Image (cartoon, rainbow, N blue to C red):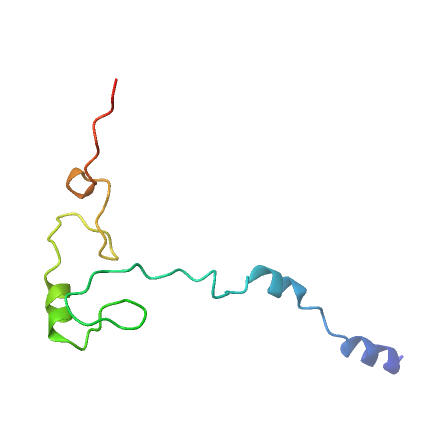
Length: 90
């Protein structure tokens, strides 16, 4: 009887369920940073190098929008943040 109880205690449960829930991030699946025009020098990936004063000043002088989301991007629900559209032809 004791030997049977020890056998059950030594078996491991398969971990296939936890691996199926977490998809692996690959280099192709990672979101890319948008290319921005920098006022000064840029890094290899094209983003502004914030060690330089010209890039710091450009980042501080962002256009003032009254309606922004928590992450700082313009809220597109408001007219002043929507891009200008061309009139439709009838």
